[in-house]
Image (cartoon, rainbow, N blue to C red):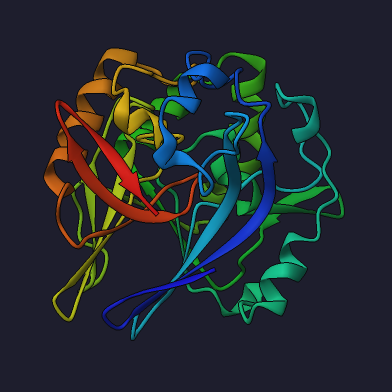
Length: 280
């Protein structure tokens, strides 16, 4: 799928799509609750109230840069806490190449945060070593985010992710650590959006009078726009994540800003009483 914001082109490259099987991440989003939000159907849920979600990367092309935002699960990775995320053999890089984005053509990798399903293709396994997948790219991590996981990846699953998908980038001298409100290019700047993780960042795109927002995991699904208190089980600070959702969605509601989620497709945020809806 493709979208444009002024001169910036955004392409979604899918690694994994699911319908349902999301209760582990959004336990309050029951089928009955989802069916009470008809605006979610058919783009974000089916008639049965099962959520539609994806793990994907977004390739952002500016006049001067070719950026991959978030890198999914990756192949050959061990120690993941979801069985289907372990030791994958997915043709994701072939899919990217067929879409016109060969790995060597990417000059920047930008991670909204450093969770397992956003960093996996940072590296690939070559002769028993984890090496940068995008050999010509600088990898941009939030400084707050990186330092948190560097110092707090004691649990086995967190240690595995940091050890195979983040630390090898640093050891290869390919990482740039930025402030959570940094400007990356003339068109792209960061918005601090903590809560899902301590240093989570969203991405604001401005070009030729148009505006786009890549939310990352501020919300895993648009149902959280209507229920701001439906925090994900993966949120490090559920209370802060709810505050962040309200602040971010309030800022961009009822504007022409194109909003694209870390696990859902594009739309526009509309106010609905004390909360919001999302129009595909």
